[in-house]
Image (cartoon, rainbow, N blue to C red; front, side, top):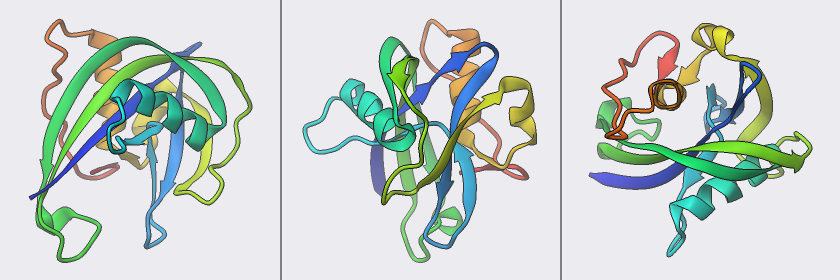
Length: 157
């Protein structure tokens, strides 16, 4: 089994959420939250700020820890053929934008970043991470844990 530790930003302002358009190696496009893998010896708190800047061009500060999600993606549902199942452990932070200007990630996997009305998210082809992050931000569970998010249709791994 592969394991991935990642940090994700949930930034909601004026009824809109900041989303990033991720483009996979096969050209597959999926809306997701700004965020990504924690680098060697990096604190997830620092990761989320770095990833927001890299993927969106915006400066942000962490306002609170929202929660931690752990889910397993079966091998046959991975984007990489032949890869083993993947346990993704995601640390979700509520963040606030403090400056910068939206722009695509140079030489990266993010083609665009946009502010999207929360009410329109359900109509987007999106990563389950979006639903997890929005649920955590909406409910603020004391345990920091969110229940399973069904994958299928517009909701992808």
